[in-house]
Image (cartoon, rainbow, N blue to C red; front, side, top):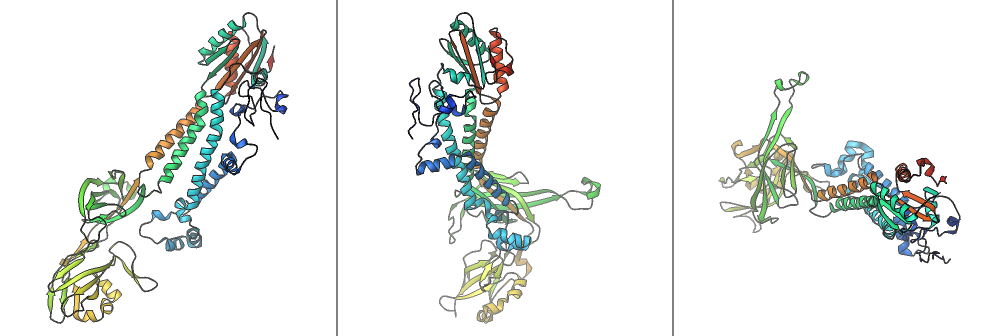
Length: 552
């Protein structure tokens, strides 16, 4: 049905406008004949979500502009976030198979938890989708309300319709003596002492203060949008990392997914002496200090090329202790844990030709970064595969359980005299216990009858005493998270500690009509009006100003 929105003052208002944009007269027929206080939300301006015949785009807009929908999305997000805290998330583990861990540790609930994908809640499509939906709702809710509010506040008229003034929640009518314009000027002077910004139009007045506080909720929304964008930005490659690196003492290890390498020059652990401990803890071993003397390198050449030795450039040294990480260009390395079990670091084996009795070597074979080719007399050993913790999967194929040299194994292709042109494979286990457990001679079969790779004495075996575990973190989004939080806090302060107050006044034939409105703290609003009237010689009780209660 066609709605006539033209006011008697001549102003043409948009459809769904409640109060005339110019004079403030109620436009709805049922509201025009009522004496109840006016609904002053957005000063009666029309919003897009109130469109009479919405199209498909409008329906989407209306959905996301609904506060109820936004509340439900926030509730669902909070429930999802709580589900993600029932058990630890996958990214908090080091070298653990989550498909096995949850069932073994938590039983059937843990298995269901993993199968439902809740072990990766904060990286799941549905959780990220909820965050995007909340951000969309914040944007649309803000635009749907801030634009009408801006139009209303930027187009305020000084002389308002009598119905608008008399139907404010705080209102007052009386008659005055003397010159109306002088009375208005004197009243304006008193309001200015209360820091009101006053505009007059003959015998009409508009006084206003703290208008900026009306933008507080929308500044808060901007902060929340920045916050959500920063959280979502963590899914951008290179923006966020939270992983762990294990480094035996004296070794250099690459930080996976980066061009950085870190060396553990020395790890130190100190313990409290008995005299430093309280009586009940005496005799126990309590760590006083964990310290990793770390060196950070950046790869400049040969990065990611397994056929080349990477060229490393030192960029920073730092003694890492708990809560004192090594920091470099957004990369942070925290002391996380350590292992004092001796770990195999390197061996110096020889190649024995059983037929001739000749021994070739020794050659250096580090566990983590071995050469791809070794020249031993007439023979050549080409490294084809390595397994740091050798095992067989369910299909009987070789696999590694971790990146730590707990049960290392190497597959070499031996080339030389009396061997096929492409060479013959030979699997070598540096640790004697692994040779027996996995049957090195049975695996090598015919090659075991002719060749043997072995160490001659324990002097050719190097162990590292300590292995340090560092937590590697990169979070480029964190500064934006703090910026969003700061903007949001500013918005909260704007809306909480300041209140938008307005006073409209007009005098017609010595009849004074006054109305006042605020978005918060009506007690303070009434007190300001009563104080200003008192200065003009009109004594009123602040409570009597409610709903136009004091009419002289």
